[in-house]
Image: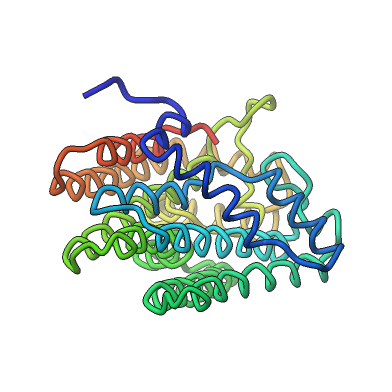
Length: 328
């Protein structure tokens, strides 16, 4: 096997041509006669992220069969849905930045952001219907339900600060892994793979998605960018993730009360938040979370090992590695 690639560009190489065609397919799917909406959509397209979800759709299709027009529909459907949820998340979190750029709600206010998110969601659903992709619609509708439930479950538990490890994994499965598993399942479905392979790739996406979210949760406790300090954003928003959940469970009652007091009353105090971050590190929360993340990484790789060696399989192996080694 070749040396592991370090960038998304390397990972998407086996489907480079398809991804280039997807760009224009995706732009066309967002066209509208409403000028304001068109301006916002162009802003979204110019500032697109790594496009991991459509890459997963194309690689999964290539791994299990042939890329078809149905694959382009699946990739557009999942990317539109993902973009809509990011816009809505920024509204809910009152976030004014996304990937280093102003968020939609920062530039065009909350009302426009909510409506643009709704527009993108409806466009995704219509793409599936217009192409008679009813099975795709079923898969994605289930993911939308799971994602909404995950956000609401996290909101409910964050208020009470009583998230257990079991609940944490339920939340991140619903919030993140459900959509990523839809991408891998839809890729296989679009390539007319067997039901068995569709389920294998769905399971692969679940394991990858959970590892992906755990890596995101670890960023909160790691040095970030030029400031060289952890952000502590989850603590500031009273979100309990695995490093903190583990430490709360394995601390004395006095330590637990101290930690919960910071989360409840001093979550906006950077000094107090940094004290709590240091405490989590000292008590082994980071090591425990990394070990768990590695378990899910291995689960994902074990599933890929059941498929024949190919360019697509190797790229997916690299993507698993990238998921847990990325720096942002």
